[in-house]
Image (cartoon, rainbow, N blue to C red; front, side, top):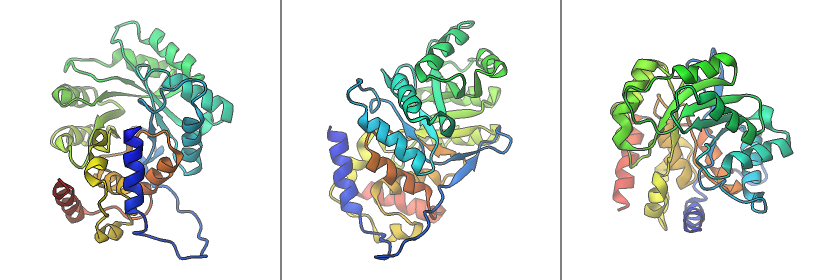
Length: 304
């Protein structure tokens, strides 16, 4: 796959910026967590995994996704984001968690697609069956587009114990005003959006709306739908990336996002366990400050 080849190449070109001392065995650092504002103290690890496309595989092609889930959990992560519209992804996640007995160690986020008032429970039951669980951690309305959208049906599922948290998502800039209106009025537990170092539109209104509403933010597509790796292909990380403990381009892009105070977690998609392990390292060590973030933007713009 071209996307994975590009990621492998770029990962290799950035390696070696930070190296542990030879022969020195240190205790593994603990993955950063952030509070879920409506979660009564519950913390969520800041790096998870998305399953769109990368987990849409058949029964004989699940070694990669299974290894990714294992790497996620072993690295201190918990969050797996999926949806009924992601092909077989919900089934794949459910089967992997059942086989590895990992359900109690993960935070499952999935979505409702149909917007049928009164039909939310039936649709949610389909998610439960495919994910092989009796309760969802997060259930969201997928790609909202109506500013008048109400969350009463979704909140009723939460009251019944079908899910612990509710939310809305959008990865389309044209729907940002609708998402902002919903977040400000309904104050959902979570908002999932697209946001990247070369895609800053969410900073103008969506992230402030989430912060004002006490809404946790999940960031999908943090690599700009592959644009960022293509721009960085063959180029070295700047030496100053070490100032915020950054050792790869993936960590560079993810740390930029995690440095925004309104962001709760990032959910880059991958079916490669080495990439999962690399992504998790973005949740370790220092994050860039405001001045460093501005410098990061300028540097990415210079890549052409």
